[in-house]
Image (cartoon, rainbow, N blue to C red; front, side, top):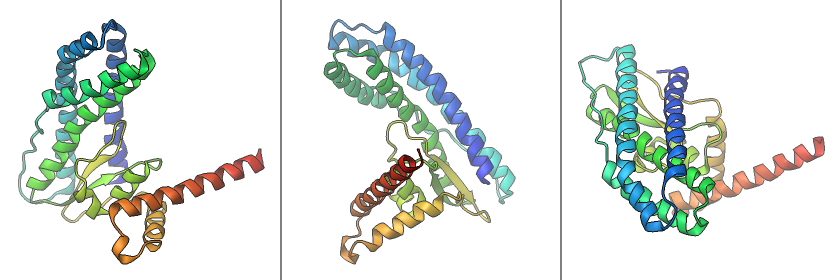
Length: 245
């Protein structure tokens, strides 16, 4: 498995996400807006279909990718990957609650509803692919570990969890809305993906840890320090841009 494999994998998921968000945008435009009850009721009727159909496509992407990179790794033994269950009802309930709250707070603002519905559906659908990768990695004796791979512009939480394999296992299902981290199996004899920008993640993580005493190095405290470090770095970068303007 290489960084190029990861990029191709991520691109397939991005294409699926764009198609999903196009559907969700059009859905918001035709949903009833006369009351929150009618709005939520229409969502309950339509979202299970979207989550099921796009979730199946996401799971298929995961199975194909898993099979391809397993074959390329040449690990011994046969293994047939299986798709993770599509939790359409559970995810629909979560999405409806979130969107109903958005509806009330935004007075039916279509722009915000489009954004929030698209992000919620993205998490539900891509979650099928992620669970497929995790579940098969756990069952497959040819896998030594699975890793979370974050993009260079990932948020503080994602960058920290992706950088530290122990945290990847500690937070196997922690993906926020509009998150584009992927789950990648590492087969026996292969090395984990470590993009060049992980050096920056590591520097931030180590600095954050050094600021805390041994008894204070909880994940929550380290994350808080990473956020402070990034904030100061962002401020310095803004100052440099202004000086060069």
